[in-house]
Length: 229
Image (cartoon, rainbow, N blue to C red):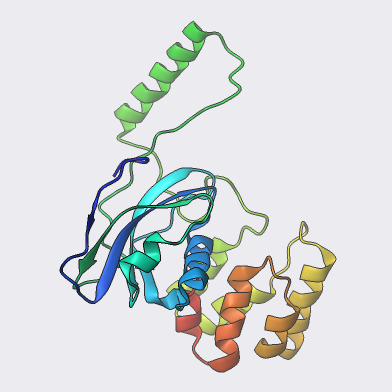
């Protein structure tokens, strides 16, 4: 898939799922899906995709949605989100359907002349070729995060401690968070009142609020809650 290219529309033969190519700029995948869901008046759970894409990049990926008409999808106009093609399918896009990723990397503000820059790039590429590739990290490794705890959540999940993973995700504070956020997390840690927490957590914590709203109605469904993020 190439960014900026339109792949056409084939929606004559209707089926269960509408698959579309979502191009986005400066959008987190989950946030983009949430916004699309609101505009289309469907649940975010109706959407599925093979993996998340970086926020600070121009990306394109396949997404499927259940019970949405192509004309409604194409009428959605959101800055930074573009539909580059859509078609019907009997199957939804799922985790594991991704064959791989292709990157075009831009490096800015290089304080070297052209010859030295080219020399270093060639040297780095030679080293990468020699060792057979580069490490494949997961999560928000490319641009960092204020609350680096994906490895902790992952440990709980691997050990089957899904409740602990959820509670850790929701209640763990970080030094760089504001006082309102810290207070909301600590309050939830004390009373584990998901419904109240969904109301007092700041709106910008939309990952957490999405999980809390679900847990308010399904307080023991920790695996399903984790799937929301």
